Amino acid sequence: MQISKSRANIMLFVAAIIWGAGYIWSKQATNAGMHAGLINAIRGFIYAGLVYLLFHRAVNHMSQLDLRIGLTAGSSISWVTRFRRSG
Image (cartoon, helix red, strand yellow):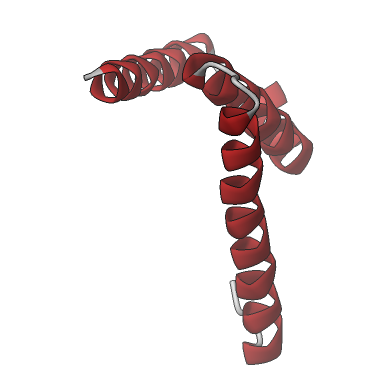
């Protein structure tokens, strides 16, 4: 896939805006007393929705094995993150 330099710069800028806004929203949620697990769950649902929105054709044609591997990888990453943050 060929991407022009200007399009790559725009994509990088948008990614930086989203990444920076995520820090601001996480800080606001933490200051409001929201539990870290709930914040991560909300972030996960947002990202899962974005993945489906962008890659719905591939997701709809996924095999059971692909689904099982994805759920195993996602849940293990979630548990590792949860245990790492809890101390």
